Length: 82
Image 1 (cartoon, one colour):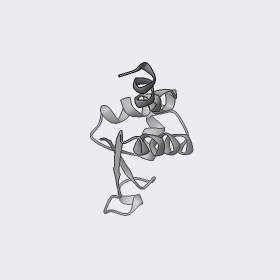
Image 2 (cartoon, one colour; image 1 turned 90 degrees about the vertical axis):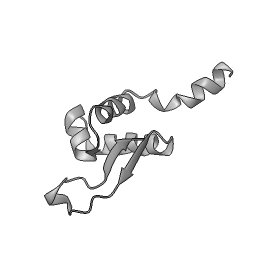
Image 3 (tube, one colour; image 1 turned 135 degrees about the horizontal axis):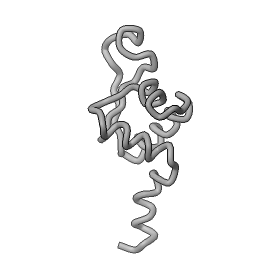
């Protein structure tokens, strides 16, 4: 494997927010966007964007929780490390 191919595979962790999101999710089975943002001291928007890129790279999975947000999580989708 060439260095360029190797770097392209790991390009998704160039951003510190994405790396911190992965660490937060690896410490828990699954978290909602709001919980990750709170744990990182970041905004929901920054975490949502980071999760979108990580999901596109196949590094995290998500599902919609059956309960409505007030009963479980204010931010909706639940994320977990893929």
